Image (cartoon, rainbow, N blue to C red):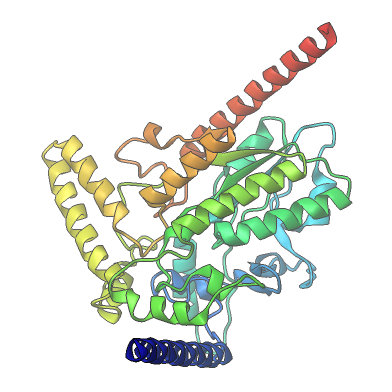
Length: 425
């Protein structure tokens, strides 16, 4: 009996010692990793294909959000800028504008719609970034050149909503995920309220950047801003798990939480939210950032060979080539299935994945909020609906706008019915 008690006591000593040792080791590693600075602050720094856009003067550092739109393309038009202010996409005046300038352009007698989202909301032309790089690399020695703006190249759904009699604020920012968008939404609504601007509706368009690969380097680590995280888990995800799993810039669980958070913020400010499912092309070369940039795909595949995202990209390319062959022989249904498989396995360019779509649909149902989904209305050969890998141009934006307007019309009808019922009582 005494021996049993002694053995139990010794076992507890071993367990406690092991636990303390593990805790100290974990704490020491955590402290050491936190000392090492993350030099890659750009949201796509660990994605060799999208990182090619970093030279286009698009982003500026922002303390709370991590980054924001740079006023470079307004300054290049010899217009005065204030680098301390935040610039957004002007809708009623086609240029980058401060929030005060945007407010001045609004018609207070019209309903106001705030559109938050990523580059599909701002409107973005990836071919322009390619053109800028070409000019930069081939400019004569000693001669600079003026970069062309990738914005305002076609009508966004913000533009089309404005054409339909609404006051519109386009708060989209290229590269934003739901994590950053949630922070931005609260900031913008707070600033608008302080300026006595009434926002009636907010459309929310996120998911493409959330699900894209950044080497498993999630936004919650790169742009934490006080949120709890451990650098040890971060290290494991970006090194050991990189060969085994694709983790987007925002996990599915965090994406769901962020979308719920944005709905809650809207309701806190008495704004009616509308969720938009990001539309994406099927007929697009996997991994390709812009037309004529196939070499970037092959370089990326070589530089990160063996990782899960590259193995998936290789499979996606196989599906894509098979689909093209089937289309040549008129087998459209088989081709469609393969093209969808290809886009679902392509984590190198921002195209929302099925698990994120399901999470978005669930959040919309749970909260009984309008859900705009026009993906099924876009044909298989969707080259006239998209600029590139995910940015909808006017035909696709017309579909999105039509559905938003229908939701507003339905909401107005329900509101009138409620008022009539109240007056009858």
